[in-house]
Amino acid sequence: MTTETSYATGIVGRICDCFFGELYDLEQEFEDFYKLEYRSFAHFLFWKYGLPERTIKSILADKTEERIIAIGNASGGGDYTLSQMTDDEVWQKLFATMFDLDHNLESEGEDDDYEDEE
Amino acid sequence: MKMRSDFVTNSSSTAFILIKRTGLSQEGIRRLMGIQDNSPLTPIADVLCERLQQYGRPIDEIVREMTERRGGARETDEYVREEFSGEVAQKVAAAKAEGVPVEMGWLSSDVDSVESFLCCESFELENNDYYLNAVACYW
View 1 (cartoon, each protein chain N blue to C red):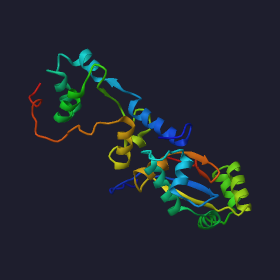
View 2: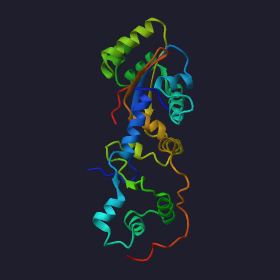
View 3: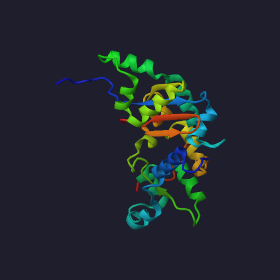
View 4: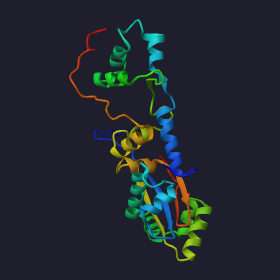
């Protein structure tokens, strides 16, 4: 992707810091603090983090022992310029390539499995 | 106290100096940034190349116009020494002495996301073909 020690390598490093700098494990958070409050981990993702139902189902369908589901703060490291750009196609393609993102995370739909009140 | 009721924006611009020992090209800027062929970073280099072409103008011309507007024409060397650094001024002077084109311009945070990113960056890049200084970022 880049030549070693180049300016572009620095950009890639800052993108990684931006996305992974302050990650924490959502399942761990659920287990430690929210297990009694929410009916399931899926409900927790839906109600606490506002993830669309189809996205939650897609994430959970791909979940394996080796994978963790994490959440971070893209501007947590103070570099909020990158976190502002996630809607732009150029950056989306870059992020998708860097992180081998799965584009099948559906976010549209009318599912209502989790919409019952907790 | 004055109050503004319309949109209020916080925009920024970063001045750059470009010494061109060869003509600008997308491949050249990719090499300068250290981006390999087919990298997903190439659109960023290509936007930088496009904007350098679009905004870059001979430095003597820009400095004269700008300093005249601000109340007194200044020499390029003096201006670069104050706004960039003595080291950059030496590079500019050496390039001009060799007849190498030296351009100056500004990247803006208000155009699109890639230029905004580059505007908020602070960088100095150099290889055999180009010297690009965009360190003066006041974001």
